[in-house]
Length: 186
View 1 (cartoon, rainbow, N blue to C red):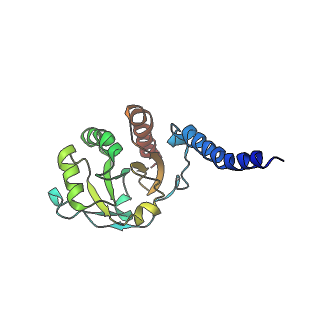
View 2 (tube, rainbow, N blue to C red):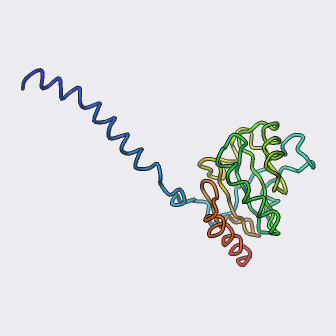
């Protein structure tokens, strides 16, 4: 084989690999994150205990697995640095105003000051907020990234998981029906 042809083919291999990777990434950009299954659905919530956010208004407590027992509840994983968390926050404010469900905030890898500012700015829909400063509890919950939201029935079983931010459709057609289903299963 001609040495120049051989060299040209050799040089084009990395270019083809990069082009294939770009094509793969581009094809997954608009993927439906709800298709990611959670191994925790229909399983008990993991054992955990989170301290409160320091100096939070109204001295809201942290929370633990024990707090999730006895009533249907929501656990929303959020962070002040998460732009989609800001976008979905209005749905939790609405839920807190129009529902009797308990809403827990799991503040992931955030400073207390930033979390307090986030809640001062957007409102605080949470009944309790746990500070997961090192992300360990989020790992136990199988969190892929913020935001994520879980519905837990009165027995402490995870019955629903929303991966990614809520929008009008996932709120009305996903979260609200999941809350009702959890209430009916208890």
